Amino acid sequence: MHHVNHDLPIERLVEASKNAELMRRMAQFYDDLSEDIAHRPGVCRQRGICCQFDARDGHCLYVTALEVCFYLSQQAPAPANSNLCPHLIDGLCTVREVRPLGCRVYYCDPAAQDWQGPITETYLARLRTLHDEFSVPYFYADWLVVLEALRAHGIMSSVMPSSGTNSIRTLPVRR
Image (cartoon, helix red, strand yellow):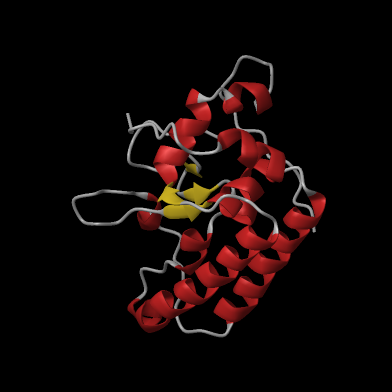
């Protein structure tokens, strides 16, 4: 189990995830990022290695508050109960349309190594500006810790289907 960060502004994240203009801007942010990445070298072979987080080798995923808001606007959170992203199912990402920045820029392909850091910094700066513009408290936190904090705040039980299963409900992506 991951350490729960009780200082994350969960209620503010849920509130911001309902702001249609902010979510439209986040969708545009990710569209811009996708277009930028499309012109760069590197291929994703969809092996799921990037979804396996291990502090021993330094691979983990960090997310900003707005990335969590966008995720919440479109997706029921899944519980984090290992060092594997809970959205990796049968080797594929089940939240591809709302995956965070780090998931979008991380490629195992050595051809992508030169551009990953600079593009990440560029787009993190854009996210920081959006945080300020929409007055959403900024944080940069471990993805699995954030998922656990959402669970601890009861967010998952309030947005998950009432069928009593742990199935993930996928909502349509708003453009």
